[in-house]
Amino acid sequence: MCSELSDMDKLILASGSPRRKEILEKFSILFTVKPSSYIEVFTDESPEKQVLNLARNKVLSLLESDTVFDGSIILGADTCIDLDGKIIGKPRGPEEAEKMLNSFSGRTHKVITALALYNGKNGTFCLKKRITAVTFADLSTREIEWYLNTEEWDGAAGGYRIQEKGSLLITGINGSWYNVMGLPIRLFYGMVASQGLTLFRT
Amino acid sequence: MCSELSDMDKLILASGSPRRKEILEKFSILFTVKPSSYIEVFTDESPEKQVLNLARNKVLSLLESDTVFDGSIILGADTCIDLDGKIIGKPRGPEEAEKMLNSFSGRTHKVITALALYNGKNGTFCLKKRITAVTFADLSTREIEWYLNTEEWDGAAGGYRIQEKGSLLITGINGSWYNVMGLPIRLFYGMVASQGLTLFRT
Image 1 (cartoon, rainbow over the protein chains, first blue to last red):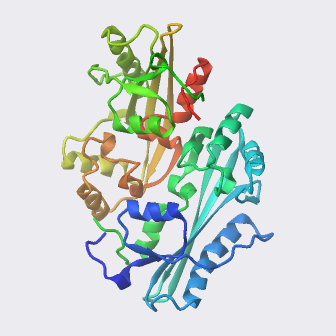
Image 2 (cartoon, rainbow over the protein chains, first blue to last red):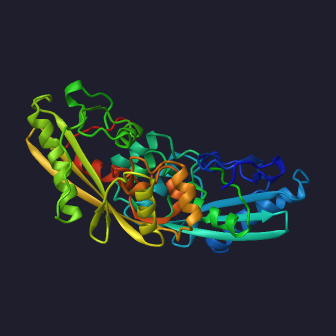
Image 3 (tube, one colour):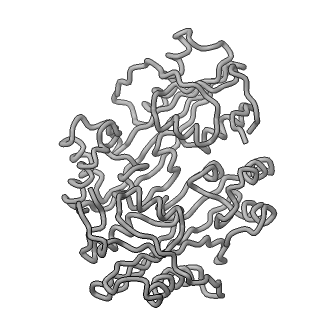
C-alpha cells in the first residue's frame, strides 16, 4: 500500500495466466509478466503436494533463466482441481469437458491454488496454499449441453470458468473466490505484508 | 436458454442496481430496467423477513404503477447485511464506514438476498432467499484506512464491495458470490426454470 515503486521493486509474475494478470491489475499492483518455461508434469503425489511443487518450480525456473534481477520479487502460482484425490486437468475436447462436468454434477470438489513468493532482497521463499470447495448443482443434460456451447470449457481446468457463465452451474463455494480464479488475493497480501513489502498502491 | 425472445417476453428488472444489471448482462439475459419507486423502511422484524418483504414489495409497487404489461415477468430483489441479527445498511460517511468495517473485522456476517419473481402469464409469485456467510480478516487500522481511501464504501451496504478491492479484506465466503453482489444467479435460474420460462440465450 504505497504510492510509488521503482522498476526494480516491481513484482514479477511467473505465470502467463490472463486471470492472474487481471486480478493483480484490479488491486493496482505494479508488476511485470515473465511466464516461466517450466513444463507441468503430473505425478502420483497428492494434488496439494503437486500444486505446491509446481508453484515453487515456476519461480526456480525463472531464477535459473538469468532474465531477472538478483533482488527481484517473484510470484509463482499454480491451481488445480482435486476430485476425490485426483487432479482434473484441462479437457482436450468437448467430450472430455462433458465427462468432467458430469463428474462434478451434484457434488463438491476442491480447487487448490499454491503461491510461491520469492523475495530476492533477502533470499527468502514463502510457499502457501488455499483450498476452496466448489459445489455444483445437479446438472441436467440440457444444462451441460448449453454450457458446452458457450465454449468456455476450452483451456479451463475442469472444463468450467467460475468467473464467466460457469457460475450458473454452481450453487456455492466455501473459501476464496479469487482462489478458484487462480490467485487468492488476501493470502497473497498476507505473504507480501509478512515480508514487509509494499506492492499495493492506494 | 433460447435464442430469441419477443419484447413482451423480456424480463423486467425492478431494481436500479448497476450490479444486478451487470450480472444479468453477463449471462446474456434479455431484460429491461424499471426501478421500483418503493421506499425501503427498516423495521424490527428479522433481517430475513425484511429482505423478503422488500423484494416482493418492489415487484408489487411496479405492478401497481401501470407501467408494465399484464403478462410481464418481473424480478424484484433486495440484499442486506445481517450482523448478529441486525441489518447493517449503507454508511452515511467515512466514519460510519470505519465503524462497520471494524465490526466485521475478524468475524463472519451474513449477506441475504431475496428474489421475487412474478410471472404475469399465470399470475404466480415465487419468493426465495439465499444466505452467504462472509468472513473478514483481522483488519489493522492501516488496512481500514487504506480501504476507506479507495472510497468504495460510498453507497455500499456494510461499507465494502466484494467485487472490487473489498475482497482484499475477506478471507473467504460460504455460499454464492453473486448473492453477495446482489443476484444469486443459480437461484434465479432455478426459479425461472421452474416456471418453464426461457430467459437465458445461448
